[in-house]
Image (tube, rainbow, N blue to C red):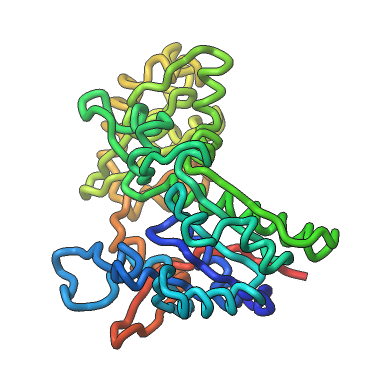
Length: 358
């Protein structure tokens, strides 16, 4: 575990994924993280979000465990005077508070920024909302994926709109809040500006992550269409191919040199000078016939034979793995964090995976 923030005390009054992912980051960095859960509702709702195979009587779930590690969990009732007093004691010497209240609840429980700032002027108040302070809409990740355009362009022409299998908007908002809190900590500790409030909405985080798809519309009025895993600007990119021994692979060809090396290794070098494939623009237009030619070529190779040849020539290629196969790799195993909670061995992956060297 990293120890860069062992001097920090973080109070987390947040549930589900976005807010707790920020608390997890600080826990991984060595901070003391106190997670406050609602005593009246049984705590973080994800405690009950269980797979059919999980113990129905257990107080935690795999989902809950994914972002709650090395946190001290305390159950409180914000309407009870004793609990309010205990919470205020924690907040008086805390460095960071993370919240994701529904509209009006922060003021209702006297946990809004002005109240907390008066209690502890040096505290960084980190807040996640759904659609900003002016909206009381219930904002689950799925709703944001729909509202921000992600679902409209995810899937295939046949599938209809598809959500991403991870609550990615929650995680993106969490990253935005981390960046904001770290900036506020710098202002407090280096620029000596005292505490401040950092606010992030799921909607802003989602729209800010549209990247090239946003610019394709803003500059060229191109509305992204559902293309499966293919790319609107590059080919071959994202098509699936099956090897002789039945493994699924994909290519991410970003340059003509990579395309040339791919064709040479697959013994179809004639495609490089074919007028339909001689440059990237032509390959994008003719991606389907190109994919057909490449599939015929890939089918002549076993996976263990083909991957080393492609990797040696720096051709971007990957086997399409399921999660079980991912965690069979030593590199992935090194990222697993374990902890025993209520007699259950919980596991999750690290989120602070960067390395800092002197």
